[in-house]
Amino acid sequence: MFLYRIRLIIAICVGILAAAAFAGLFYPVKIFDLQFAAALQRVFIDFSAAALVMLLFILIITVIFGRIYCSTLCPLGLFQELIGAFKKNNFGKQKNMPFKYIIAAAVFGTLAGGTVYILRLAEPYTYFGSAFTLSAAGIIAVIIISFAVFMRGRFFCANICPVGTALGLISKFSVKKIYLQKDICGSCGICEKACPAGCIDSKEKTVTNEICIKCLKCLNACPQKGVKYARAPKEKIKFSFKRRSLILTASTVAVFAAAAKAGAVIKKTVSERFSGVILPPGAVNEERFANKCLNCNLCVKVCPANIIKKADGNYGAVSIDYGKNFCEYDCIKCSAACPAGALKKISLAEKKVLRIGMISPPAENFNELAACAKACPTGALALTAGKPMFSAAKCIGCGACVAASEGNIKIYGVKEQKRI
Image 1 (spheres, rainbow, N blue to C red):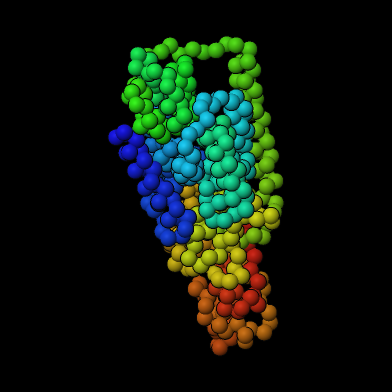
Image 2 (image 1 turned 180 degrees about the vertical axis):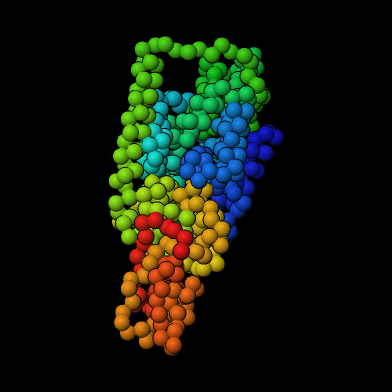
């Protein structure tokens, strides 16, 4: 009971922080840097000691406590728990489906190949963020997952989610596990019905810790206190050499290798739609950003100017739209918020000299552009002898002149974001 309450309190706190961040109220301290896929990617593409510590923290707690990440730190997992609260009972034991290893191999294989193009389609943090910010794809995915919660419990977590699959493999060898005390357990099935992941077989008195999300509801449910969460009695680890297991292992490795090669191809082609698109500060270049943005939409919500728009049918990742506002000169919130490294962490001083776009050559008649010159923070447009003069070398593409000219000045993106 005590452990269950502690886990529940932590989960509620994380859930509140997640909802607050995606509602645009504030960005809680590094809470989203604790998302597995985001931290994994950032370690490799925008390395920092903080990112490595976050990733190691997730791995270490999984080694010690099992898949507690899925019931405590994953926003989509917490959402499913909330949905599951409206169910009286679950549907008992759930199969550990082998196709999940193929899914994980395809997802992480393409990630190793250099693109998140496939990861976006199955990553829980992305689903939560895109749904919370009312993106159609995210809403549809969450509706399907919610329906699955009512029909099959945490089926997505157990047999679809690539992050869950990866952490589940580690959880098989974790220090602390859920297990049934066979001398106490009466095979009543109460714990099995309480388990949302379907990992308990009350008849056989076994627990599949690979798919157990460590929600600890079974501890709270058992009337005989026959369910334990501790260092399990030593058991010999059995490595299966059955034909089916060997075929599955070989297939998983083959899919990973093929996906890595495919990822390298996708990486080169996925950015074609981004030609000329204005990207948020820290995106570096079109190809990198198109292949690294998870579409979690956190940058969309933290942008005070509301100029970062969500992915749509034209672009596969977020982008900047200067239709109603411009990029504030003294703001780096999008870069600071990005947990996946798609936007590099940059300082305010770096942002102020970073070119993210360029205005089109101004018209010969500059008289109407006096307001634009006054709005320009870098002096790219300046009043000289009473007339506006343009210096391309000073333009950072912030869009202030676009707003001041009421759209008369056009601006386009650059292939590579560089210091002026």
